[in-house]
Structure formats: structure tokens, C-alpha cells
Image 1: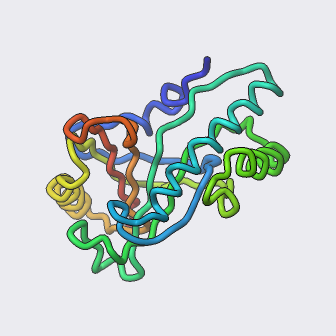
Image 2 (image 1 turned 60 degrees about the vertical axis):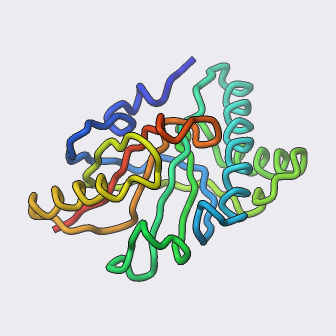
Amino acid sequence: MTDLKKTYRDHYTARNEPAIVEVPARPYLMIDGEGDPNTSQMYSDAVSTIYPLAYGLRKAVKDTTGVAYTVMPLEGLWWVPDMGTFTVEDKSGWLWTSLICLPDAVTPEMVADVLPAVTRRKKLPLGDVARVEPFGDGPAAQIMHWGPYSDEAPTIARLHDFIAAEGFELVGKHHEIYLTDPRRSAPEKNRTIIRQPIGR
């Protein structure tokens, strides 16, 4: 069993202090949406859709290559049209992409076969808008957050202060990687990598 978190260790581990990383483009399964993730039915539908599709693609890779891999953690990109107004205090206007990293072994043919087949079989609510495309943060700063998502604000502030102190600016979209499954973990046990792309 290939553990992609170990293969991409530098990008799926983080310390309690901010650090700068370079994240290359990799294939991702993605679903876009909008609204507060705590109350939005669309976000709930995205989460309930993306996992079965990810497991369907894993089965296709194993059937084709004989190699199994662990399905990667759920991730989220979060933004608003004017990132200068982005705040975790008001999520009602958030735009987002739910995504799961895939191995290079996933082919366009697998995507074309698996996504509609699994969507039909499992009656997935957002399977028709799921897609696979490359994504990478490029240069970014990241930090580990421990505990509930609702308590992220001070961690995000520390990350942003670090970015400014290093002479960088915030670019791109706020990125979170949920190392603990949000469907199963108690909030106080959550481990979340918070990542922010940076530029000069």
C-alpha cells in the first residue's frame, strides 16, 4: 500500500511554527461551491460526494496497475472576491473548492469512466460537477492548527504576521488540509495544516 502522505511528506506535515514551502502542481479531484461550510447544504453535499469518487478512482488505479494507495485527506480552498475582506468571523460569502490529491497514476480515461459511473451508482448529489485538474500552491507559508476549526483565527493571524515579517504578501487562496477526517474526529482532536500562498 502506497501512502501518499509519506511520499509527499513535506506538504502533508507541518510544525507549530510557520514555515515556507514550495508546493508543485499535482492532480486533484475538485468540487466548487459557495457559502458557510457550517450551514451550507452544498458544502455537505460536496463532502459526501468527493470521498466516494476518490475511492472509486483508487479502485480503478488498483485494478489497472495492481498498486493500491491510501486516499489522501480532504482539503479546502477558501476565498472571497476581495481577499482584503476575507475573515473567518463571517463565512456567509465564502467561495470554496473541496479537493483531494490524487496520484499521477490516475488517467483521464479513468476520470471519464469512474466519475459518472460512481455518481450514478451512489446517487451522489454533486458528482456531475466534480472534475480532476492540476493544482499547486507554489511558494507558500504553512502552520499546524490543533483543535476546532472555529478557533483557527489566532493561528491564521500568526501565519499572516510571519508572512509579512518575511517580506512577502498574501496571494492566491487560503488553503486548509484536514489531516483528521472532519466526518469522524472530535473537534478538539482536529489537526489542520493552514497554508497561504505568498509572493513579493
